[in-house]
Image (tube, rainbow, N blue to C red):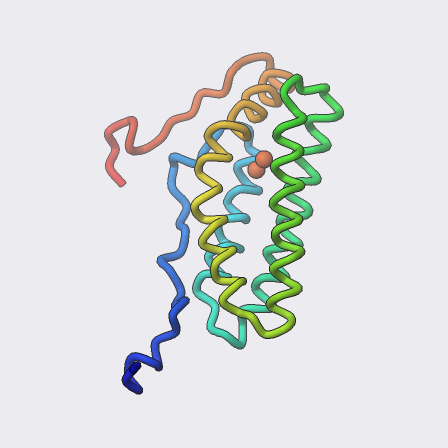
Length: 159
Ligand SMILES: [Fe+2]
Ligand SMILES: [Fe+2]
């Protein structure tokens, strides 16, 4: 049986929030700015107490809708060749967010915390494999070359 002390610690206690690292820099500034905002919105959900969680989740949902709409628009406007799987992945995340917000509205906050953790696990791979290709594509169309990305760790400048 759980002791009162143990019971006071929620099973889905906030995880270590996702933090920005230079590894997330892709080189197309408008996308990098959006990704910084994503990390901040997600961290706000991950560190929210129960009372603040629904509003933080709403703010993250609004961010994601705009974030994905912008990337989808870039892909469609420029006829980015591998756009379909990227657009589909965005749609799947928005659908998960919609379903989870319904659960949270019914009082199931743990569902919201699990989604936040899932997004923290998902984002680095999405940025590396899908957003980075789009970043290079957009940079090349606007500036005629591949972005030069200087990361502090890679340049031996420490953290
Ligand atoms: Fe993105
Ligand atoms: Fe994306």
